[in-house]
Image 1 (tube, rainbow, N blue to C red):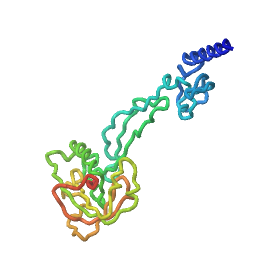
Image 2 (image 1 turned 180 degrees about the vertical axis):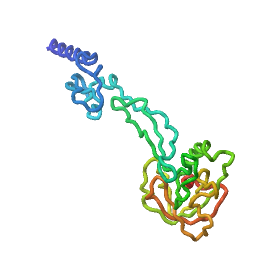
Image 3 (image 1 turned 60 degrees about the vertical axis):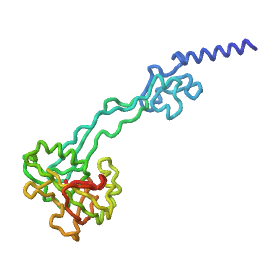
Image 4 (image 1 turned 45 degrees about the vertical axis):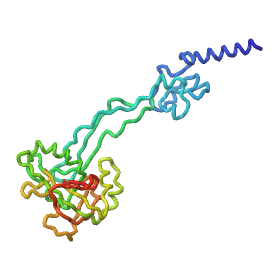
Length: 267
C-alpha cells in the first residue's frame, strides 16, 4: 500500500514538473492574440485543474489559462506617442473642426490595456483665407469656444497676417446667459465637454482676441457692440451647432476675470 502511494506521488510530481517545463503542455512559445480556440494546450491550469488549457488573450477572462500563461505571455499595454499640434480649420471663413493626432508606438498584447483615442477634434473658425484675405466676420450669431483654444490660436497667429507689430490687446465682454438648448448639457465628446458648463442665469466672460478681430473695426463679430443691456443676443458653440442660446450684454472690460469654466473666446 505504501509502495502504491509512493508511486502515485512520484507520478504526480513528474506530471507537475513536466507541466512546468513545457513537456506536459503550457504556453511556452504558444501565445495568441484575442480569443482563439485553436490556441490550446494541455497541462495544469491557473485554477489548479488539469487538462485542456489555453494561451490566448481571452483565457484570463474565461478562467482557463494554462498555469504559466502569466509568465510566458505577459500582458503588455498599448503605448501611444504625444499629441501632434492642432491642425488649422478644415475650411476657412466658416465654423468647422480642427484635428490633432497621436500614433501607436506599441500595440497591446496578451490582453493588455487597449489603445486610447488616437484623434481629437475641436471647433474653430479661421478669419483669413489661404491668400491672406480677411473673411468670416459676416457670421451671426456670436460663435464661441473654450478659452483654451486661445492659447493654440495665438501660436498659429504668430506666422499669419496678425503679426506682433499689428496685434491688438483685445478686450473682454461679460454676458448673462438667458437661455440655452439642452444639447449643451448632453455633450460628452472630449473636445466639447466645456459646453456642459454653460448654464442659464450665469455670468460668462468672452474674450475678443486677434485674429478673431475684424482688421477694420478691431471688434469681434457678435460682441454686442452698441447693444443696450436689454437686447437679447444670440450665441452658438463652435463644434456643436445645436448647442446655442441667448444672452444679454453686461459690460465690456479690458480683461476677463471669470472662472475658467465660464471663460470663452469669440472665434
